[in-house]
Every structure is written in C-alpha cells, then in structure tokens.
Length: 344
Image 1 (cartoon, helix red, strand yellow):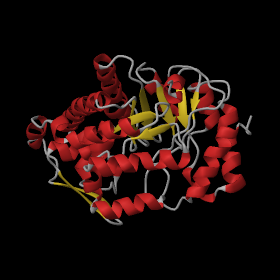
Image 2: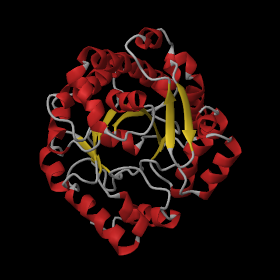
Image 3: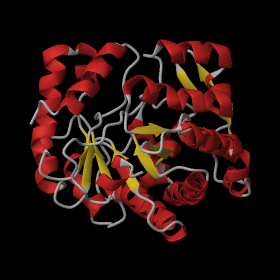
C-alpha cells in the first residue's frame, strides 16, 4: 500500500496533503504523561524500546496522522559519543563534561550505532505495529544544533558566545562539526535499515547565523549527511528543517540533496511558495500557538497554508513542535479540517 507522505515527497500532489506534526508525541497527551511517569526519567523512556514505540504510536492512533515520527531526542548522539546526559525537570538537558579538542579523539572511537541499539529496536517495533499506509520518520539533530548543546553543557543561553568559536577556534569547531556529520550519517543510515521510511534533520539553532558561518556549520554539513544517506540507501527521502534561516533557505535547496524542506512559523509563506515551492516539497509553517488557541483562529491559519500550496506537492505540518499546553481536541479538529477538504 502506498504511503501518502512518501508519494508526496516523490513529487505527487494528492487532493488532501499528508499530515504529521512535529513533537506530535509529548506532554500535551494524557496517555504520554502516564507513559512518561511509568518510564522514570526521560532518557530511560528514549532508551526503552517498548515504551518509546508506544509513545511513537500514540498520536497516530489518536489522530489518524499519515506518519509516525520516532520518539527519541536529538541529544542521543552526544550521549552515544560519551557525554553524560540527563534531563532536569523544568530546566532541560544537561551534558558533561565540557567538550574539548582533546576529547574529540575519544568521541571519534565510539560506535554510536552500537550504543544506540535501543533506538533501532524502537523503530523495528513501531514499524511492525504501524498500518501499511502510515510512514515512519526517523530523525537526528543537525551537527550545529547538537554542537551548541555539547559546547554549552545544556540549554543555550548565549548563542553569540558559541558563534565566536568560528572566529576564535575555527579548527576546533570544524573538527567537532565534522565528527558530528560523520556520526549522524551513520545513525540515520542505521535508522533506515531498522525501518524508517524517511529521515529529517532538525537544525533548531541555525537561525541568526551570518553567512558564511551558516554555510560552514549548517548548509554544508546537511548536504554531506544527506549525500551519505542517499549514497548508502538510494531513494531514501531526506527532509531538512533549519529553523529561522529565512531568506537563506534557498541555499539549502541548492545542494540538491533534500526532498522536503520544513519551514518555520516565522517564514513568510508567500516567500516559501515563490522561492521554495517550485523546487522542493515544502513542509509545515503553521504556528503551534494557533493550535493552542484552536477554533476559527487555527482553522483560518491552517487554510491559508493549504490554499497557498494547493497547486504543488505539500506536507502539512507546524512551524515548530506542539507545545505542552496544546489541547488534544484542537489537534483532532485540525486533522479533521484538513481531511475534510473544506479549505478548497
């Protein structure tokens, strides 16, 4: 049975676009909160294949979405490289010890595929449970975004301080980005082998970087990862989501390596339609806070994207992930509206 997400990424234009939502599995769902309490820590949940598969499947069951996205975290790569990883309630991730040039050799020797074997078991279990028409999405954090957390030891408080590394310690930053590019490629190829149909790269902290830093730490690494994935597994679709890059978005398309391009809620959708829509399958855009509000506000905002991209292949999604305060009934209403075709 054909999977609508995959046929759309291949260039077909269905009457009703495929829909999935970033962070569709999460704290806004009561069933997820129960699962999270059962798991103990967030990291334990990510590394427990039975529970992580259940978290992956929950929103697809509840909302009949067109795809499931692996329940994991972008910081599993630094964990697999040897950094200690924990998640502090209300504060976010903590990574230690600090990354140094000397530690990169030890990181390089780590087998991330072996250490993250529970993630691949999660994919296998999810694949077995998914309906044939539903796609399974794997993902990873992009090298720059993962590097920022590794260098800051946790949530980024001052991105400018990390940006200075490009000027002050270019060799160190290049080495770290190169290492993450290599390990992320291996990780995504293994996800495809475990059952993922498509993979997405999240570059959450790409916004605000001047050119040529953006080119060096974001555009070229994503190009290299996608090229490695496609060389190893020809035909595997790759989606880029570099948040906040605005007018620099076409630079990612120029690599010729992405099949889908996620737009964030700050990007002018008319710019995306004119500059991206003729060259790549655009995905997303809707402000997650519109889904918190729901009602006519949400419906009108969603309809504006659906109408604007009606004549090209398009994947409906948000411009960033669902937030914890999102009412599940609003997500249900959003999916029903899109499926109804009432926006046409």
